Image (tube, rainbow, N blue to C red; front, top):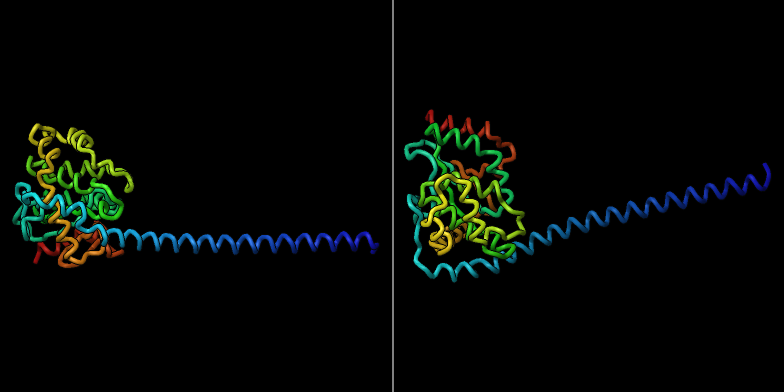
Length: 258
């Protein structure tokens, strides 16, 4: 073999080795970035939790200074639950929700057909509790304003359809669009008969703000970890990874047989 050929092969091996080393370095950098991103996500969550703790009761406390006006038909301890379904239903589902919460929207999209079927059949009653967790974590007042508007819709006997409209038109979590009364009133136009002078006044005056604040305080005192919190016979079914609408439906059917 000529000296020229040996030199060519040596150069090729060196280039290959250099390329392999370059790939190893790139892979190491990629792994570092992935781990770093994970740490940022965890730290970000901790920061949000810290902000929630720091802000709990901040702006809400100032709005709680007015009288607590529960919406029509509110039930449960301190009248903090909005009931949906027939009073005589043997099974009860307790739902804590925030209208700015993406996970709450996901729950509603997945379980709404089943909940509607069971409540209409008189087998299930759902008790909705409204929460302002995202306001505390990300700032703004959209959770509070939307919850007040939903309570105003309850006064008009239109809670369920307006509740559904709010989740169907939920802005991204960081967008405080629901803090705009005009937006909430505009969405009321999607519910037949809801956009009335009485409803508008209720929304613009924040008639049920103090009630919403009290509901959020009950959520905090309950020690719940987040929204949605969905309780059936003491079990948070939203945290049960094996839970499905079909499985939940069977649980309700069984409760009605007992």
